[in-house]
Image: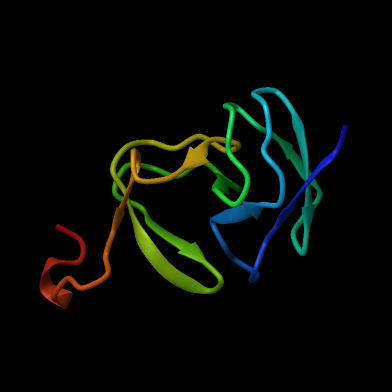
Length: 97
């Protein structure tokens, strides 16, 4: 079964899953380029990495930076609080520490 995910803006690092996916499931990207395979189980409405992200990368969704990766995140992996630190409500000089 093909699962759809929504890429909100060109250049985004993540897409939002419209349904839950299992590890190894093919995910069709709406508003993005093609498809990818989910590396892990990911719940509905959570984020999936569209590309490999190095540790410390600023992560973009809907054209805006939403956080910074706290570890290497492989394409097709779940992106959430376990590997993404929010940059909201942080002073600008602390945003990338």
